[in-house]
Structures are given as structure tokens and as C-alpha cells.
Length: 135
Figure (cartoon, one colour):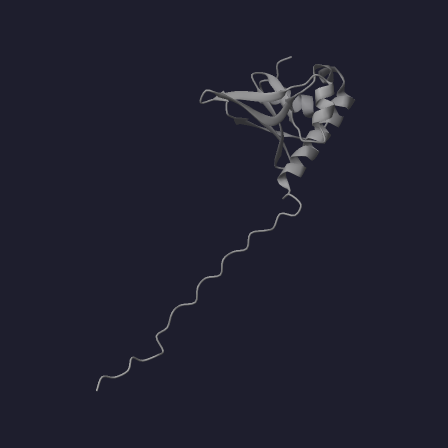
């Protein structure tokens, strides 16, 4: 099933909730609350995935989104939408919610990671000490 125009993508995701669709890299990004959680490429839809959602997607025979650049293949953390979900709106909405959760988790800093502190500006050097006078 091909979904390669913004209106058909928005219609499919309507069971999940309101989404915005933006053109990117020859495909489309699907956003909710300003966060990208799905993408379309060549008419295929892919959902954001992480360690919590990949096992469920793999069990559905899904595969990661892979593209070629500079002679090598690069896999992204988006996995193909399982075919059966196009005909099962409730399950589709559940997978979409999990993809949004994966996008939220990816946006949060890793636990234990420290925030970078801004370096303090050095204080200006003042020349208060006078050179000894020559006698």
C-alpha cells in the first residue's frame, strides 16, 4: 500500500491523533507535538523504534529503514510499518503511540549524562601593579 502524499498519511494517522507531515529527503516526516516519530519513503511508512519497540516490530517481520550513501548502507532507527496494520486501525494506533514514545525517549538525555556547563568568561586582566621606576 503506497502512502506518498501528505493527505493520505494524515488520514492514515487520524486514528492516532493529529499529525503534521513535512517533505524531507525525497519523502515525508510525520510529526506529533513537534516530534518526528514516523517517516515515509517511496510510499512505505516507517515508525521510530528503540530497544523497547524493536522486538515487537521484528516479531511482525518488520525491517529497519536503510539507505545508501557514499557506497555504504546506513540503517536508521525507523522500522517498516507491518502490512497488517493498514487494515487494523486500533493496532495501528497502538504501534503509532509506541513509536511516539520511542521518539520521546530518544530526545531525552541518557541517564547519568551530565549537562554541559558553560565555561565562565575569563576576568579582564588589569594592570594595577606598576613597574618599578628606574633610578
